[in-house]
Length: 165
Image (cartoon, rainbow, N blue to C red; front, top):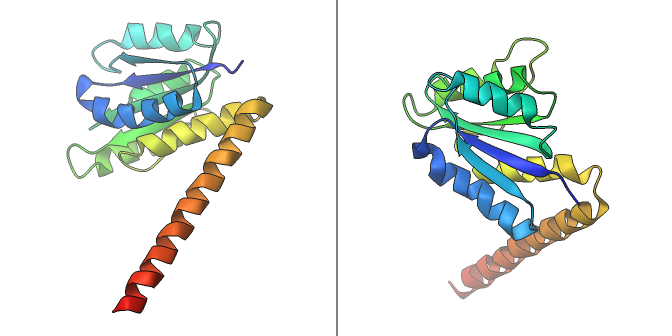
């Protein structure tokens, strides 16, 4: 059985982006937990969660935060688990959150997806877990084949539509 994935939001306003990830976890049948912990307003709680995450059965932690977006860094500083940051668009079109998430000091890595990239964060987390879970890797392969088939079907539909013009 795969490990769980944690989705930590810096604010409840980050929920719409976190829900993108959660939808993917549900589709794959992956256990997850979602929490709101702030790097600035609940630093002790965030740190305690990160320090106990491995022992509590987590394999990857996703952190979604906007503005100063220090959440992923605080979590990564307190765990050996892979941490994926989702910069959330709030001020400055999300560029501030992107830089805060991606520009980590040596020794505290945070994998960072694009601004509001909840779906990609989920798929990256699943790919990390799939390294040691053959069943999950197989499901992920099927998922990618379906994406390919969907694009090819759209290609065919566009070709047919343009042929009629």
